[in-house]
Amino acid sequence: MADNSIFRQLGVDGALQTFLDSRLDKFNQPWYKNYFSFSAPQLSLSYTAVLGESVITTAASVVSRDAETPLRARQAIAKLSGEIPAIKVMRKLNESHVRDYMALQELSNISDKAKADQVWKLIWDDSKYVAESVDKRIDVMCAQALSTGKINIDSDTNPDGIVLPAIDLLHPNENKTNASVDWATSASAKPIEDISAVVDKAAGTGLMFEKIIMDAKAYALFAKSAQVKDSVSAFFGITKSASSSATAPITLDRINEYMMASRLPVIEVVNIKVAIEKNGVSSVMNPWKEANVAFVPAGNLGEIKNAVAVEETRPVEKVVYAKKENTLISKWSNNEPFGEWTKAELNAFPALTAINQIHLLSTDKGFTL
Image 1 (cartoon, rainbow, N blue to C red):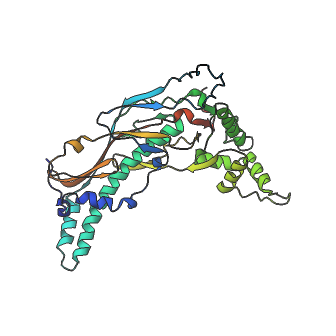
Image 2: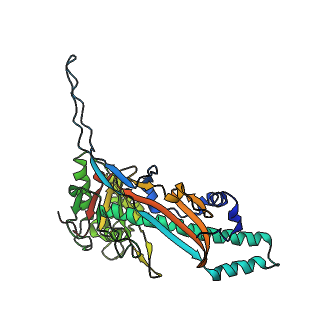
Image 3: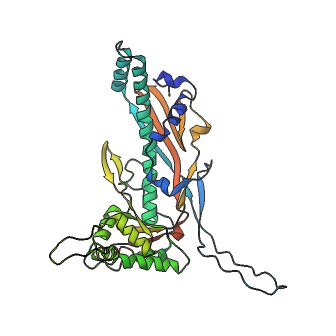
């Protein structure tokens, strides 16, 4: 049974919420917020996401003055349906930690302010940890969705939770392209031609891209390819003498200046790393598929479908609650086993609603088309 938090400062109604609100700028901003926004919270765990189908507007007809107005057909709307899963994490202050805290509070040579600061630091550290842990899980799902069109919840990425088959987000097969030559073959790779081919293919359907998102590893292959070096060097008028081994300084800024001049989307490099804990040991994973490059339009790419946590509608007695945006944070203590607990919960799942306007390029020819 839950008992009051050991931190008496949280006994004041709304104290935890006020404290977290005052420190919102101290939370690390998750990557997914660059491309996804939260939908309105719902009570039901079932969701349906409408996937944008039409990318081109047909021209109106020129008709005689007294003719009927032509009626345009409405394309079929693709939908993705599913159930919103729970994302949860908990952290504990054990008896040893609590005894250290109590001992410090009893010291007479430490000011009341220093004691209060220590209390709020303990509250902040655990609250920040669990809230950001939830954000990291959404980062994983959104990076997978954007780089593969699927989400994997398996024993490697979710070792102490549920394991599911790959969740297909209905990415159109025609929006996938293989590189003409594996980019790892720098001497013969043609990354600029590969990118131009994707852009031209999309332009045929009336679609324009704002940027190209690629992992740092794919970008390194892109930047060191002979075609990119030669093209960027020529654009900036940089020449190499026969007696010199120097090459053009290929920076991302220079590459993007060349891309814009060539009427190609600019490149954004991502380097997403997320720690996954298994049996108390953390290892780092990259949720973005390194070999895949995503071409994306301007604007929001999707929504985080989310449902209200049960404890928001039926709060547990003696548990202190607060919200960090859509994530519910709760704090309480137990006497058996003894400890102070901090939990974060968010019922959420990303829907890539712009998936029909996103193209993927496999730099290692990994797509079966």
